Image 1 (cartoon, helix red, strand yellow):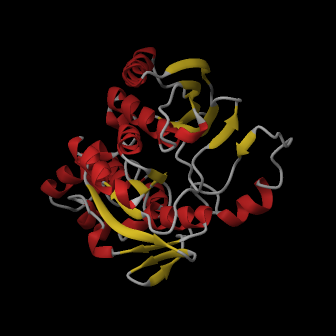
Image 2 (cartoon, one colour; image 1 turned 90 degrees about the vertical axis):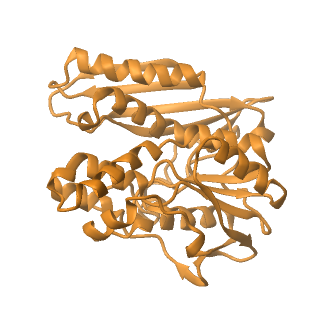
Image 3 (tube, one colour; image 1 turned 180 degrees about the vertical axis):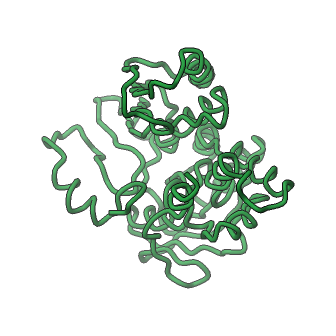
Length: 333
């Protein structure tokens, strides 16, 4: 298990997966390493559910931090193609967070939820000694829809086309330069550009737009472990082969010089806001048009075929042992 970040597949399979409580027949998709959400059969409808930590980064300003937190916790349900509808939130706040700061954060979070049509249905909010930024609680997000509306994480099929939105490391670069850029010996113009990448870390509406535009067979958000991790997780869940053309992978401005300076592989660093999407060949153009109409960078980066594993320019890749952005964060803190 890595020192920082989420557990690896070996730890999950040995310690978590064998111990998931009672087996219930209505749970049609339960916890799997690298799979974004679970599915519960409700009869004529299905419930999609996912849980993630809530992070609050005061350095962003509490209004921006609220918008960022909403996007992060809702993305894992949005990749199912169903809009997030219900949220249950737990805030375990540090005593140093003032009433006014939380109010600013919460009002921004509320605006995002209202705009998306999502309701907060339960929660817990308190200050506790020992709690500290940025990790201040957890969120469970739910969506409800017909079973055949759900984009399953294991649905990619041979012949599908692979699309990528935004590109590698946008979240890592945006956050690290916003938090620690003043300590980096980089040109101010490079830092300014890199800080803008945090505005790319918004995937919820992109996921819903893609699912509505064409026959999307599978989606995965590119978070911890970056693009390498996402490719390996998605192929493992689907049992097919991904072939990726490195030159076709989009790279947003500011990402490469910051990653080079920090000595991290951009393909291994977290990139909330990026989506790896498998699309039936008939839907590629409609999905690209839908994403581009939103101002989202998107590109065809590869294809799905019979076999197993993820390959880049013909060479098989493995998931990173850990996301390198965690070590960078720890070094600066």
